[in-house]
Image: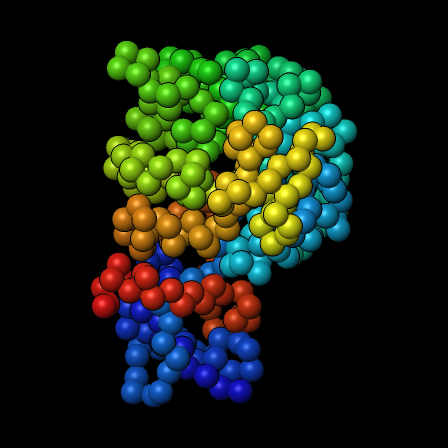
Length: 366
């Protein structure tokens, strides 16, 4: 069956292009061409499938609970159904054997179903900024984790590791940097000076900016202020719950240049799954869009990266081309990966076709 799709904008080679149409034949993209008078299905936006660097779970599965190829595949399928084609499965703080099992699973199924690599979020975190991470597993950076990262990197597997830089032995941190893993500061009580020193030593990213770090004060900017004022990459959970829309706007405007921020979902297993789950033996419930434990504290996010993209445009006011980059090219570049491209011959299942009328005015229509 032949079909023509006319998007308000299509992401081509790093730019959002208006006035184009896509010819689809038998489920594949046959042609990309300037708009004609042919009858076409109007949609809002067409982009490559999105790339999410922080995915704890989905489809009723948590990485920590099922660190196997089947578990990772189930999570990836749940996110793919919502427009995310590539994920970094994220192991949160746990016993060392859990992270090692997840690494084995990634090695077994990397590049299948959009499994890019592995994100280790913990256990080398600040106890004061651990969030919902289990305190009994927290420990300073050690040789066992470095060896795990080096094993993955020796196989050219992309790795992100979130740690509190103030708790990392300099020699061990240097080994992580030398492996070319993306070392990200997070769940940290670092001062601005400690953060700047870490950036100078090769920490190139900050995990979920604002969350699990000290707030900025007039004479104590902390990791948060140091990150915003630097050229390191910063992930942002764009659900309006973890960070307010206003604070997102402030942070994005304050960065020294564009292209330094990317969106993450920080999704838990409720995305594409049930409305509750168990974490460290404690029940987590979905209430009014929030995932909370019995005390009401946040425990991950219930949002897809597609929702983050729409939120960035409609709630934060980010220009559509910048918002698309934050969910596609920027995270991939951070991990040393080429961008996904829209090319004739590709399956339409590898594209996000977004029909969201609320984006119309932002794209210059309506």
